[in-house]
Image (cartoon, rainbow, N blue to C red; front, side, top):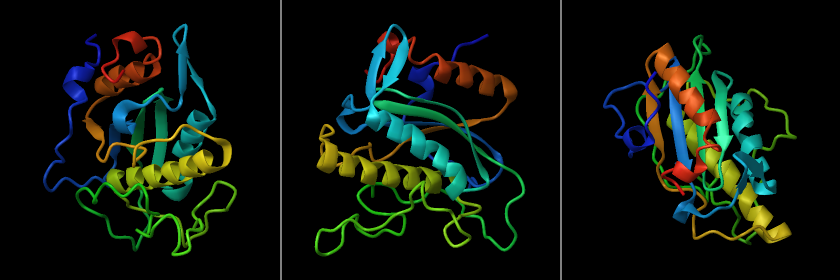
Length: 213
């Protein structure tokens, strides 16, 4: 069995022209912290020990299924300075919803999902989707691309991290929590899924070899 090679697969992805990133399929995603700061916890004896910020990242990952009901959150790991996951687009999109083709614009982690600033004109936090708020029909989204889902994830995690900095003293970051782009690999068969899944789950054990340290 060939092991997943991060030096090959973790290069910056060039989106496939004309590829429908809302169609059924599985995608391996990696997002890195800006400047590769270690913000989400530490590795001890091959295990990832999440701090409160890391637990927040994990929470918002699984909230993707509530915001995007046709997405399935598969294997994931929060690392000190990056995040790996497998997102699956499920078959059976809602009727009446048009699919989005291609990748959305990137680089707006300081805005909400509607493109509005995180704070209003008086500097007050704007309300956003929150796990304690039920997801009604008006704020669920079907047929979104993987890029749409990742933009939402980056926005939600950035907004809550900013609140953590302001309220409980989480470590500050430089302008943006996440790198502007992300790495993505289309998983085309079961063997690839198995290899990538094992790579994700064993990431903490292989921390010393990780190219993101």
